[in-house]
Image (cartoon, rainbow, N blue to C red; front, top):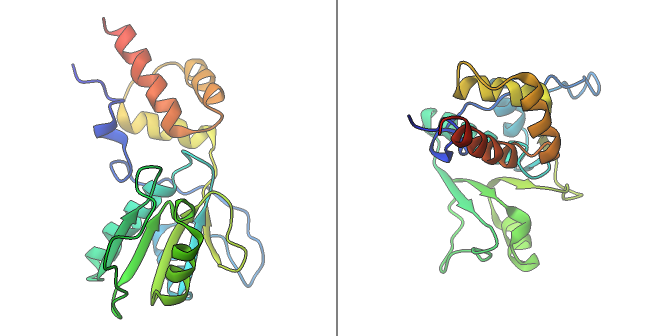
Length: 191
């Protein structure tokens, strides 16, 4: 039997992003509670950011956004930066009609981040700490209830909630780390 916690079942974009019920901040800026509201909020800004800790769903949210933008006929370009890829591609251009989505923005050198911020016509980035002059589109926050929902989407009969709670707590709320541990747990239980 295939392990339901294999990355091919839960990596970014495989499970729909789960929106956290956020408190209303003010009448001028209502909390974003669904994809349509998020898309509408993004339209109000040339550049915006998704902020959150490691493993809190930033990449999953980006993949959900990309699917919807492409469904709506938008020209989207996705760039992923990490420890192995820290530079813009050679010959990188800034087309007029393209929405640029950058996952791992803070991995880039400062001059490349600045170039993206100044030259992109439309830009959404993910960061762990907010870029001080860029509007925040959404803050991903790890929540145990969301972790349980995601786990139930992967396997109808998940491990007991006490086991899920222990895994979640050990991961520090990092869903990715927690799913890696559940992968090992599942392997041990099915041997």
